[in-house]
Length: 252
Length: 96
Image (cartoon, rainbow over all chains, first blue to last red; front, side, top):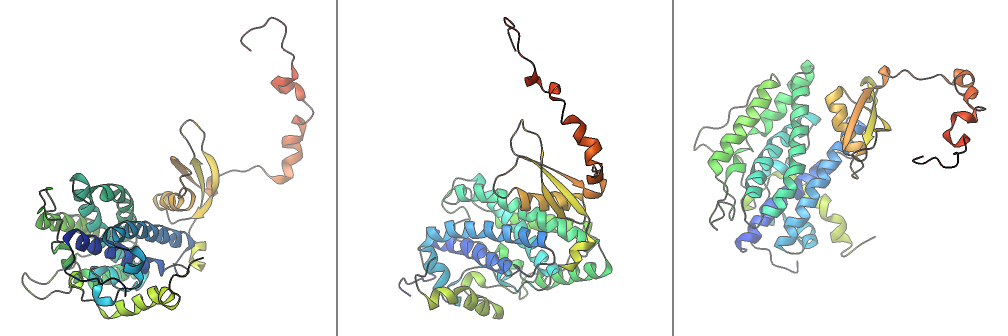
């Protein structure tokens, strides 16, 4: 690795890495559906969302350094994404649950960033329109799967339950976004409140049950922002990076 | 992909710019109208092709039959006087 990429990078860089890695990793996971989606129309929808996220990741990682080096030459522990976005696709319902949780969060977060005048406001203002569509896509599917057949209902509930324990991490303050630079930054407890209200409304409308989380102060999954990742992330990275590592500088 | 045959087919009409008519863009499968609209957005407007989309259940479209082609369309073939260009504009007529 030519550039040392340490967790103690300057704040704007660390912030760009956290947001950029979320977008990059989720983009790759969604890309894994190509050729495997239940229907052709949905395959294009997921690929479109993946490409939106990849575009966001490129801008963010470019703020932090060389985008290719950051994406293809970092080790697992240097990634700062949430553990939620690295979770395997599972069945379609689990992918939708992951989309519902993350896109609701991203829409709220980017909405707040866009309304401020911080470093990330211009990027957020552009991305928030894309993300609003991602959230709508996830909500539409949550409603249809939840209020669909007995099997789709059960699978959707299972997806929501399985990923719930990764949602707490989203509300750990991301350095550089909490208003320290006087830009009237993100108020994390309020973000969590809005997120919970929004997600709960969709889940209940879909005739599903809102999962219950660990009690305050109890252990919960998630230390992705500190570079700790779950088992499947290493395998995902190996696949994502192998071409670049096998043929450095390859292009076509 | 076999399950896609269980979803109804929809015809997609896209208006490319304000002031133009919606034009048939293609068709797709979707479980209901709302999802058809979203699928149409993803399939037919991802390169900025449109500002408005209509989706119509394909089953709701009544089409002319190829068997009726002769009686439907051929009679118009030898009636050039139905085109405005058939007529010469008289001298001195303005605003035409």
